[in-house]
Image (cartoon, rainbow, N blue to C red; front, side, top):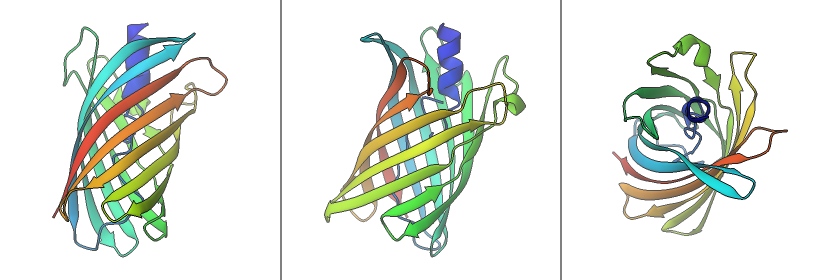
Length: 206
C-alpha cells in the first residue's frame, strides 16, 4: 500500500502538480517579459478514506518561471517527495511547460509535462501531462486569491486519469517576495478516497 501511494503521489506534477505533485504555487498572472521568479515550497500529503486520514508523504521542491512574451510564461520544476520509511532525493519529479494568459491577471492556462526518476522506475513509463486552469482575484493590493483545476493525463494508457483542485493565497510582502500557502485535493474519479496536500511556498521575483 505504501508503494502504491508513493507512485500515485510522485506523478502529480505541478509538475504540480504526483501529491504535487499536484499543488500549484502560482497565480494566473504572467511575469513581465524578461523577468524571472523562483519559488521554493514544502508540503505534507495525506490519504483520506472512510473518515480516516493517513500520512502519505512530504514534498520539497523548487520552481523557476520566466516571462517569455507579454501573455506567455515558461515554467520548470524539480521536486523530491519523501514517503514513510524513505528519504528525500530517492525520487525526483521534474517537468515544465508553457503558461498562457486568457484574461489578464485573472485567468490562465498552464500545460506542464513531467515524469519521475528513481530506483526501479522507468521514467518513460511515468510521463504525464497536466493541463491546468488557473484563476486569480486580488481583493486587496497585498493579497491574491488563487485556485486551479487540473487533469492528470498519463501517457501510459493503463493508468487512470486523475483530477486535482487547489486553493491558495498570495500574500504580497514586497515587489519581490510573495508567500503562497496552498491546499489541494486529488481524486481518482469513480474511486473512493482522495489525497490532500497542504503546503507553503515563497516566491522571489527578479
